[in-house]
Length: 119
Image 1 (tube, helix red, strand yellow):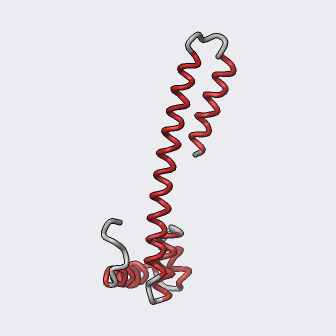
Image 2: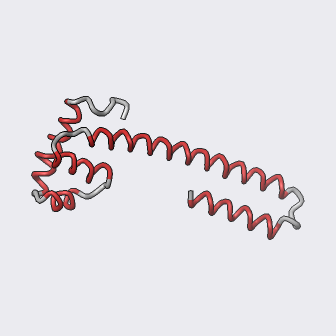
Image 3: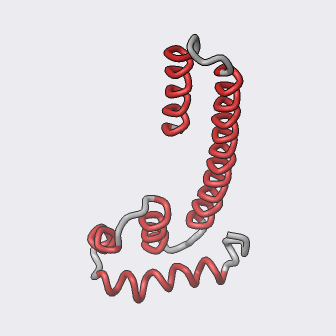
């Protein structure tokens, strides 16, 4: 979104500064606006997909029965915490979190068929 706004600003400034000098400038500006509109639409589609996927992941995590495993999954896949931070928050060693708890959490999700195969 920020990048699109920059492009929009560039096109606007160019049209204000050089619009009188360029003969076919307005046609070019419309092309730029069309490109910006396409980029905005693509960004909105990606954002929709991201929100939908994150919601599915969050719903799956919320159905995990063990609170420790649920927290681990939230820290990792919702908040994108590093393993070291997760281990510290859960008060376990990094090895225990990565080798024992994480596989157990993933197994519970798989066993309960919580997440659809399309993710």
